[in-house]
Image (cartoon, rainbow, N blue to C red):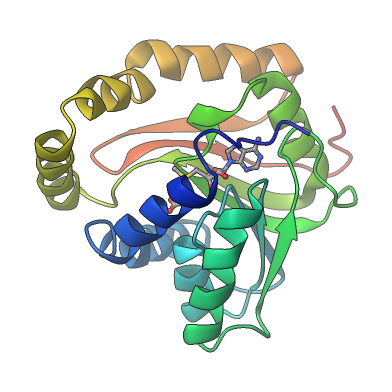
Length: 218
Ligand code: SAM
């Protein structure tokens, strides 16, 4: 398993948990609502890949009847997530699953909706990861996988504060959302043969929307 011990160990998980509850806190409800409004998928199974402290998983569960699986390779992230889910009173709706996006421990055609925020930029092999994502997506299902801060106002305010805290973050974020990176993901999706996808790129971030059609195995 490609466990991210370096960045997402206890210290990294604690830092992510802290920022998700403070500076980033307003983005998750906005992103969750954007996803629900766009796709109208409110029932069935949602998987949040690289769920971290589970802030997006919680915001989706609060706005829908979806059962959510919070998949992350880091046990330390799951420790934080477990407390956050219990505090939100959602332990019955959100299941933690430790696993790697490159080898997802779920059956084919499991998910009605697959979401992921701020995780794909850390994946070692995006071809393998997206083949796995496509495999576990149900025919008729959608993905919304990428990164962003919900809207322009939140993006501008949070980016300014992140750069103030850590000047290196500017370049990290620029690379993630650069047109070259969008092109890298577009090329990969064509190479693995995903028949129907679009890439949303703008003030709301950079999001890969895959629509799986019936009989759509790669
Ligand atoms: N999605 C959360 C959010 O927006 O608050 C957390 C984002 S955090 C920057 C990235 C997360 O992706 C971490 O929790 C990390 O453990 C997870 N991750 C990184 N590589 C992964 C992989 N190969 N498989 C599963 N999870 C992974």
